[in-house]
Length: 145
Image (cartoon, rainbow, N blue to C red):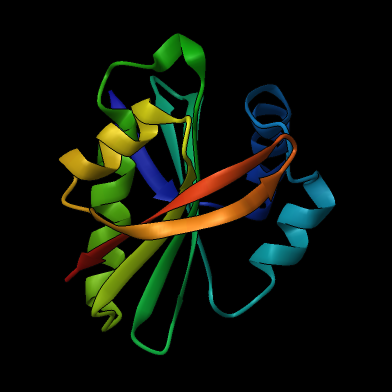
């Protein structure tokens, strides 16, 4: 059974651990706790049969949403969890009055780009040298709600 819920303060340790395994520039447990203390911060956590499987972080402010991170434990990939997290974030954004969602993704992350496009995001541009570890361009995506 897949369960998607709002991130709680107890979740930051699990998220930080997965961040460290997945990203070259992971958010620490403290950075996550600081982020989630902000009014605009939003987050979802996914569990399968009670086991931590993934998460999504984003922000909602002034009618706009930004999808910041999606992380899915490699053991649970290819099961549609990323798409489910994005759909849930989209519903949250719509319910809070957002009119558009934005995101950036590494140019080399073709799997993530394909996921975003399958979820309705449209590529709108690039940012040269946006990422630092390692240095790489970002693709910009937008989804009008």
